[in-house]
Length: 56
Image (cartoon, rainbow, N blue to C red; front, side):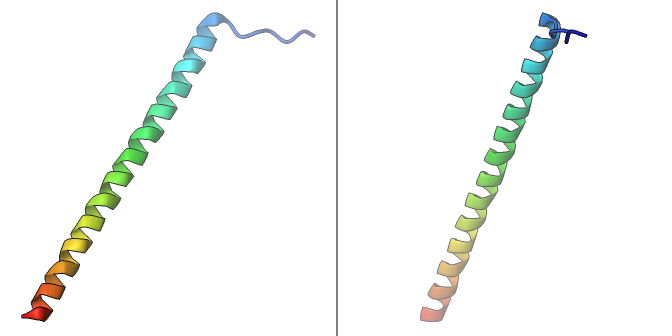
Protein backbone atom coordinates (compact mmCIF):
# COMPACT_ATOMS: atom_id res chain seq x y z
CA UNK A 1 0.00 0.00 0.00
CA UNK A 2 1.66 3.26 -1.13
CA UNK A 3 1.89 6.21 1.22
CA UNK A 4 -0.04 9.21 -0.06
CA UNK A 5 1.92 12.42 -0.36
CA UNK A 6 0.50 15.45 1.41
CA UNK A 7 -1.46 17.82 -0.77
CA UNK A 8 -0.12 21.33 -1.42
CA UNK A 9 -2.94 22.68 0.75
CA UNK A 10 -1.79 20.57 3.70
CA UNK A 11 1.84 21.56 3.14
CA UNK A 12 0.88 25.24 3.25
CA UNK A 13 -1.12 24.71 6.43
CA UNK A 14 1.79 22.84 8.00
CA UNK A 15 4.17 25.65 7.01
CA UNK A 16 1.86 28.27 8.50
CA UNK A 17 1.57 26.25 11.69
CA UNK A 18 5.35 26.01 12.02
CA UNK A 19 5.81 29.73 11.32
CA UNK A 20 3.17 30.64 13.88
CA UNK A 21 4.87 28.45 16.49
CA UNK A 22 8.21 30.13 15.81
CA UNK A 23 6.63 33.58 16.08
CA UNK A 24 4.90 32.61 19.32
CA UNK A 25 8.14 31.25 20.79
CA UNK A 26 10.02 34.40 19.74
CA UNK A 27 7.35 36.63 21.30
CA UNK A 28 7.43 34.66 24.56
CA UNK A 29 11.23 34.85 24.69
CA UNK A 30 11.15 38.63 24.13
CA UNK A 31 8.56 39.09 26.88
CA UNK A 32 10.64 37.05 29.33
CA UNK A 33 13.80 38.94 28.38
CA UNK A 34 12.05 42.27 28.87
CA UNK A 35 10.81 41.14 32.29
CA UNK A 36 14.29 39.99 33.28
CA UNK A 37 15.85 43.28 32.18
CA UNK A 38 13.18 45.31 33.98
CA UNK A 39 13.62 43.27 37.16
CA UNK A 40 17.38 43.59 36.88
CA UNK A 41 17.13 47.36 36.56
CA UNK A 42 14.70 47.56 39.45
CA UNK A 43 17.00 45.44 41.62
CA UNK A 44 19.95 47.62 40.71
CA UNK A 45 18.09 50.82 41.57
CA UNK A 46 16.94 49.26 44.82
CA UNK A 47 20.51 48.29 45.67
CA UNK A 48 21.74 51.80 44.85
CA UNK A 49 19.06 53.27 47.07
CA UNK A 50 20.17 51.00 49.92
CA UNK A 51 23.82 51.99 49.45
CA UNK A 52 22.89 55.70 49.35
CA UNK A 53 20.79 55.32 52.49
CA UNK A 54 23.65 53.53 54.25
CA UNK A 55 26.03 56.38 53.38
CA UNK A 56 23.73 58.95 55.01
